[in-house]
Amino acid sequence: MKLEIVLITGMSGSGKSVALHALEDAGYYCVDNLPPELLLSFIKLEQTRDAKKVAIAMDVRSATSLPLVPQQLETLRKHGVNIKSLFLDAATDTLVRRYSETRRKHPLSRSELTDQQHALVEAIELERELLADLREQAHVIDTSIIRSSQLQGYIKSLVAAPEAQLTLVFESFAFKRGIPVDADYVFDVRMLPNPHYEPDLRALTGRDEPVAAFLRQSRDVAQMFSHIDQFLSHWLDLLARDHRSYVTVAIGCTGGQHRSVYLVEQLAAAFSKRWVTLKRHRELDARSGFEAPSGGATVF
Image 1 (cartoon, rainbow, N blue to C red):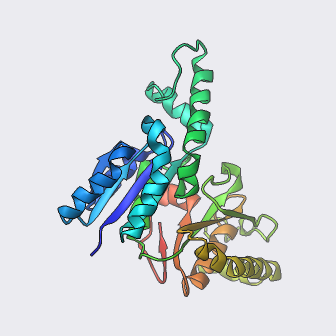
Image 2 (cartoon, helix red, strand yellow):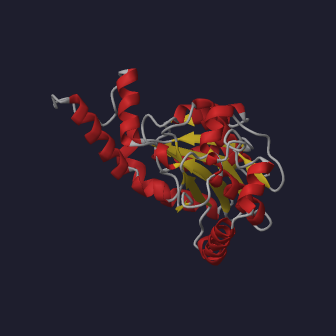
């Protein structure tokens, strides 16, 4: 078994410590804030120790040497090291609130500024610029409105997914709670018939058969599924040839309970026949936790 590395990067306050704890629970040897200058020598050392699973967190505290990381990762891959790169992100207002609640200082904050709120926002935006290249090459996880337990589940499912050229992540969400910042493609299905207005269906979800039967009767729902299916089928091969590791497809409706959930379930089932496929229901997970994986697609 060759060495597997999970690289955790992301915004300060986005949950990197939570992610590392999840990986430690999953059997990874974890190192926080490893200076990029030491990455190659550290991996060489772990290989001599016959290590199998290593997780490394890097962040803006090593800002001056972060530009080294992309080339280092490419070098490691050429030497047969399996690398999964994850980037944790969150909306700026969420990060500001978290820093305000914990009263911690952002690593890029400028102490000479008297307006601390402005200083914090300025530091966050600077951090986004410094981490842009790493974000571009990683699978992004939006932690803005998820609990620590949800994030731990997401991380464990991602690293447990079989090694593949490309992994598809289908995610349902509610527009009223914001668009996931980790989405590569967003499809709006709010124009479709809404089971919320059917009294017998209101309390159910898109995973329940009565809701599925209601939506299957609609030609518009079938056409929406067909259009998304055709779009992804056309472009996924090109994305895979461009060495993309993950593609996140977000399906949104008003409440994230019926229409978007139903379409995520159907799309995940269809695409799991060819691609490694994960599915996530942001609003349902927030209320009820996680399901065990079933069928060809994994729920996280």
